[in-house]
Length: 551
Figure 1 (cartoon, helix red, strand yellow):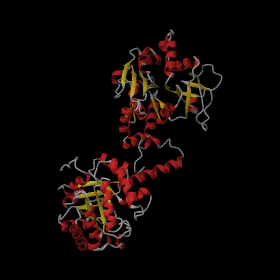
Figure 2: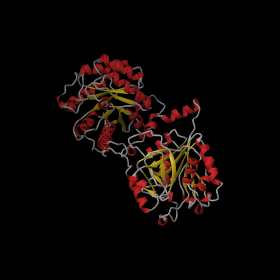
Figure 3: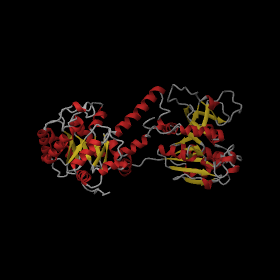
Figure 4: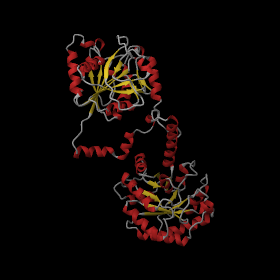
């Protein structure tokens, strides 16, 4: 395929697409976001569909959106993408004078060309009673083409004349007569349209047209036709005219219905594109780079993952790898954890390995080793990574699977020390890392100032029931770093330090009189301690699959 000069103007690139020997394809877009998506998909041009531009405004494809409103959207599309844009300009939004002004305004916004159709203003979509719609007078339409060509300042700006004779049922002879008149009037290409489900009349027209000028088609109705048939017929440009909008509508309908029915976002949030992907499409990365140049750099958040153990109850599955490398729905536990950190823009991740540490694979993380993992507790592992407790830091067990909102809510807490506690009945019935807090979880009241009082296993002589279970996730920020390190050093002086775990560290902080804020959750997480947990984690992960068009 002949490459188009990427340094040429957009109008020149559209003209090159229309005139090159090989067939070209352009995709519909209807706003800046979809224009960027089209470019990232690899297309060489964009069709600014009249139907889709009207639909995104929520109005009919009957010129209910004014041409100035359309031009405003086009400006955003041109800013978001470097591709040449061909506007579906309906009938030119009026007579020859409207056409002249339209061309002028399109060129001012770097739009590469406009396609106008030989129907009467205001237009009506061709697939709605097309055979009953009147066509424009040939001479009047030719005058509109000539006016547009005379008005353009860029010689490469393209005007495509759309012939509606086949849609209206006027036959091949009329279609060819009109196409030739429009070519002679200065049209740079002819778009021949059809509403039949077979391409026969299009291919018949193409044969009779015999490449007199570039020929454009829109195979929305005859979509099952093999593309090779278009190549063999000498078609210059194929327009995929409305499929991004239709795909978006289908997905939005599915999501809206599900959220309305469930009255929660929990089951949908992780099945749609993350907000970070929208930020990426909006160009947030460029802003971040500019921020580094022009603003004082803000502190970043680090993470420490304790992943030294083999895992009791998982011996049959961990002969050659540690627990954190067990597969959960096609991705290791550690990979899912680092994905959750990345989603919250945490890139500086330290993993403390021990058992089969050479089998740990997590690209972009720092691996440190607790060589005495078999005889020591979690605080010995944390000691190996203590240098990573700088700025804000998340410390977590390595066997967690959770909804992303849990980490997000923890990070958004203003407290210098904060933990996540699960208040569900299932969590409170456990025997590990039970938490007693200053208040029970009032699930209808948010933003409570709840403090951690103690973390321990069950059966430790507590007369009051536990408030929940600490899930194994701690956030340290600001002065909380010094508080945590002081408590750690106090524990390090104990004779039994090498056997201590993270709960003892939290209790040490509380005993020293420092507040540890509690962020309550109600389920939506799992830790993996045996094969049954691993199966449950797999089911949990599968519940977060992506929303598709037909969901």
